[in-house]
Image (cartoon, rainbow, N blue to C red; front, side, top):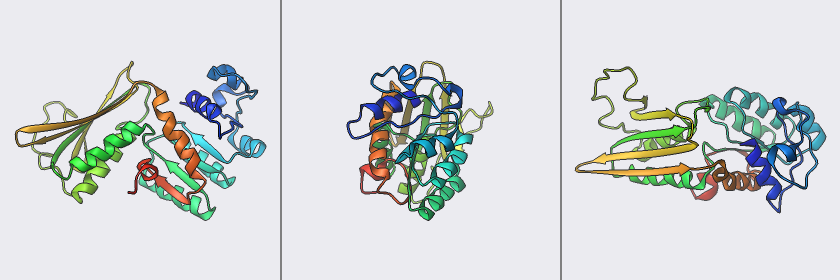
Amino acid sequence: MGREVVKAVHSAPDMELVGAVDPGYAGQDVATLSGIDGISLRVSADLGQALASYRPDAVVDFTAPKAVMPNARIVLGAGVNLVIGTTGLSSDDLLELDERARSRDLGVVHAPNFALGAVLMMRFAREAARFFQDVEIIELHHDQKKDAPSGTAIKTAEMIREAWQGERSRSAAMSEELVDGARGGDFHGIHIHSVRLPGLVAHQEVLFGGLGQTLSIRHDSMSRESFMPGVLLALRRVGSIRGLVYGLEHLLFDV
C-alpha cells in the first residue's frame, strides 16, 4: 500500500510527495522501491524527524494496527492533517483521534476501505437492510492481513444496524455450532465470516435472505490500485475537515 500511495501522490498533478517513512526500508531510494521516475528522495526511519524536515500538509498512514495511534499522536502533535487506511482501531481510538484533531484544528480521515466500489457496496447494503432482517457478511483478504474481521466488514455491519435502528437479525442465534466458530463472529447479531488466503486482495459479499429469495451485494478489489482514487480524495479534502471523519462515504455522499 505504501508503494501504491507513493505512486499515486507522485502522479497527481495537484500534489507533491515530500517524504516517506518506513524503518524497514530506511535510507533506500523511494523511486527505486516504487518503480517511478523523476523523484530524488530517501526513505526516513523516524516519523517525527521526517515531519520536522519536510513539513507536509498531510500524512497517509498504512501501517500495522498497533502503530497507528502512536503515529497519529506524533502527526497531530506536529500540526499535520492525517489520512488513515489501517483498520483494527477501537471506538476509544476513534474518539481520541477526534479529540486530538479538534484540539489542534486539524482533520483526520479514517476509512476502512478506500475503494469507491466498496463504499458503494456498503451504501447499497444499508439500503437493502431496510427491507431484509437477515444478513451475513463474508469478507476475504490476503493472508498477510493482521486483523479479522476486516474494518470494511465491521463498518458494513454498523451501517446495517443503523438501518435497522439497532434491531438484531432474527436468525442470529438459531443454529448450534458443531465446530467452534463455524458460524463466524457475531457482531451484534450479524454473523461475519473471515477468509485469509494467498492470492486474494480484498473482497466482500453481503448476503441477505428473505422469504423465497436472497440478495447478494459483492465487491472485489483485484489490485491495490483500486484504493488510490479514494486515498487521493481524502488527501484533497482532509485540510478542510476539523476532527475525525470515519468512512469515505462522508466525503462522497450527504450522510
